[in-house]
Length: 239
Image (spheres, rainbow, N blue to C red):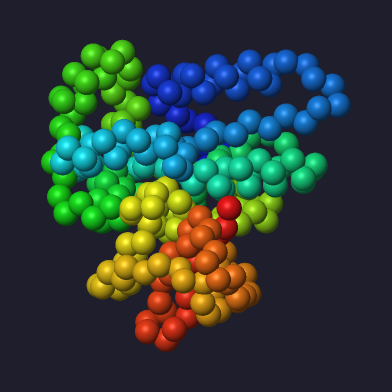
């Protein structure tokens, strides 16, 4: 669903969003642009990733509920870049979906996270477990069980491009996994474990021209991905 979709189910999270936006747009603010960002789950170091890592630690990193519910997400770097983009483009106004263009199912998200962190298996959390857990901590189970398939149509139409449009890229090159997990990269069917030694030409993940790395440089996303053995090195955007 993109920003033009209006026929939402009237559940907890939708009611919250509607009330927030209604209150926001009703306020009179002359000569002030109004932009409402509908933010997806934001992936970065810490934050929402902490409970996911805890689940993995105890072998509970399997699907949640059916696992078929769509999981919309965005990397924190792209969230900050999008805010900066909107601030700089003064013709932009209204509601924008702050979300990666490539949502995945909950099952694929958990599988990708297990692979990226080297966890071979994870037990699933069934719906009845999640409902009990949500009741115990005083929250709504639909925050996990509801399917959210959101598209960033308006921001893409404005010319904005994402650093991290794919989940694998975001997890492996986005500084989310920390020092321990950052260097495991899937190359086809093989896993290459590499460290950036600061040698050779690199092409950044956003497609910029190759440049030489300074010896010893340790940027966020300093993971090397060999291009089919051809020697090209790809690293993620730098902090």
